Every structure is written in structure tokens, then in C-alpha cells.
Image (cartoon, rainbow over all chains, first blue to last red; front, side, top):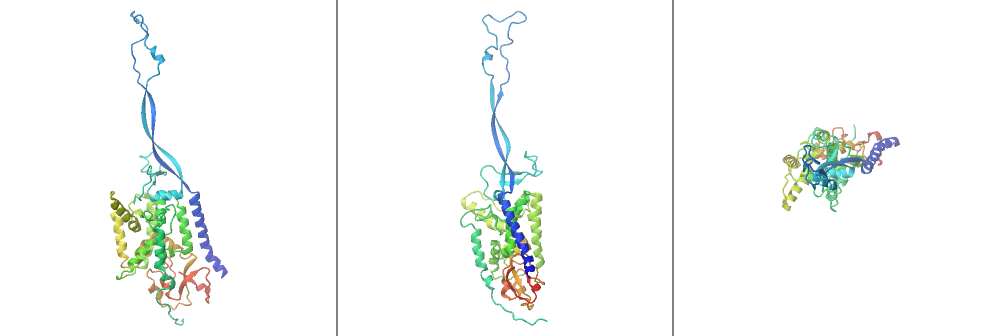
Length: 145
Length: 283
């Protein structure tokens, strides 16, 4: 009878113990990397296109020279900074962040995370198999299904 | 040949009398009375977490969504292991809110038919196919992704959310026609049979049914008290006991069968003196 009780007790105890272990592991240690898409705007300086002004410096090889009192062109430019134009460039980057399983449960309930599959990899600069956060800013409130 | 024994019991069994009240009590817990919205925690019942009033996350939704992202949902699996090992499918009969909806509809006095026992195996097709394989292979966008068909989601989430948008004067997002059709079909079927969703399609009931034979709490069958009158099978609306009184998976442990003395609430610690202990079977 005791053996029968032990046998009958063994499986539920193992299941409960395993269940508790699963819950603790999932809540505390199970982490997944989720990539968040961000738009980054950078300002870059582009040198102005070269535009030569005043012809060649010095005297002409054919004798014509500069008028007296004149200055050689280009001398003034040595004292000034070269001209630049600024341009704003927007780049898309994917920032990885680690999410614990309870947070992923909440994210998945509203369709906030999806798996990059082979069919998506061409449109998104992420390898297939990675997790992508589907929203930026506030999370959606409703499940997409 | 066994002596004819007295067929005892009339009316509902003692535990069974309280079932509806206990179901309503749990319903209050699932409907987030304190507006906690603890969707990071997994509940053991079939209740859509997109419901405006859902407290916890649905275990089937978690299994399907985690399968879609190729991850193992340890929290959900652990919850199912713990609850299944402790009480098995008692959750279905006493705790599940969608089961309560079907029970209330079944109280309407319409003709009732019993669903054939073999249809209960279709739950495992739903579990493996719509909750396991299709999400894993095709993701959450597939038309057969379980949450896109779930009638509990349609009743508890889609319709209330649509109504909320309409009341707030916002752009209405109509639920899927397929989802609504499935909901109407099951609610209509619940008028003419007992718990059609639970007995034929519910993947969560399929999981809990597997734990029935090993759970700490079970329905005890005592052959010493049994005189083969088949009253238990007539009392059971959900095809729990079959010809061998050994099928455990379809039983939702409503305890209606306990009107017969041969069946009772049992735990592995309860001591029932019988002539032959090996005859003590469980449901």
C-alpha cells in the first residue's frame, strides 16, 4: 500500500517541482534579445565643391603679368577656413535589448514583438531568426488578432 | 455475481451544488476587479488577455505566441504543470469562465444532445495544429493562428473592444468575420448540448485532461460500491466515464456523477478501505 502510495505520489510531485522550476527560471532567468528599430538623425559636414576664382597665380608665361599692386589670388584664402555645407542624414538602426520572459508575455499579447523570418529579411536589415519590436514609442493597447 | 446494491444519491452531489457559485467567484478574479492588468502572469484558465477586463495572460495565447517566435514559454508551461498535477481538469469544471458561459447557456430549457465521445480527440488536433505547428511554421499572421479563431477572444475581447471604440467615438475596428462566426456557432451549440467547446475543441482542456490520471486530486471510483447500474454515465453530460470507467481525459470533474456512492472526491492521501486495493481506480 505504501509502495502504491509512493508510486501514485511520485508523478504529481515531480510535475509540481518541475513546474515550480520552470516558473522560476522563466520569470528570473529566461531572457531573449529583442531589437528595437530606431531612426537616428545625424548632421554631417560636406566640403563645398571646389570653385577656382581669379585664374592662375603669378605672371603669365607670355609676359602679361598682374597689375602692380595686385595681390596673388589665393593668398587671402590661406587665412580663411574652407567652406562646408551641413546635411542631415537619417539612418535606421536596430538597438538590441534583453527582455525577461514576463515582459515578453506582455509584449506578445499586443503583437509588440515578432520573429524575423526569411521572407522579411530582405526588407529589414536584420538576420532571420531575430526578434523585432514592432512598435516605437507607446505599446499598442489591443491584440492584433 | 455481485449482490445488487442500493442505488443511493438524489439531487446534486454536495460538491456539485456549489459549482456555479464557485465559478462566479473565480470569474470576478479573472475580470480584474482591481484593474491590475497583470498580463505578465499566466492564468490557468481559458480567458483572452485582450479582454478589457482580463487580469492575467491566457496560457493558450502564450503557447501560440511563443511558438510563433520560436521560444519556449517556461512560465506558462510551469503554471500548467503545477495546476494540472494538483487538480487536473477540475479547472475546466469549476474555474474556467468560458466554461461558465456554456453552463449558463445550457440551463436554457432546449432539447439537448450528447456529443459522441470520439469527438473529444479533436481537441488534440486543435492543440497540436492551431496552437503548436501552424504558429511555429507560419507565425501569428496566419489565418489559422489559434488566437485569430478563438471564440473566447471574440466574446471577451473583440466585441467589448469594438463596443468601447464605438462608445468613445473612435474609428471602429470590426472583429474578424470568421472569429465571430465561430463564436456564434459555439454559443448556439451550447444551447443544444453541454459545453461543446470544452468537449470538442478546447486545447487547454486537452492539456488538463492528460493530467487527470496523475493529479493529486481526482474522482475516486470504488468498485465495491458499484452495482453497474450505469447511473454515473447517465448523470455525466460530458462523456467523462466510458464503458471502462477509466477514461479520464474528457472528464471536467463537475462531480455530478457523485450522486452515486461509487464515485467520490479522492486524493492520493485519502484512505478507502476496500477488499482489494488494486481495484481502486481513478477518474
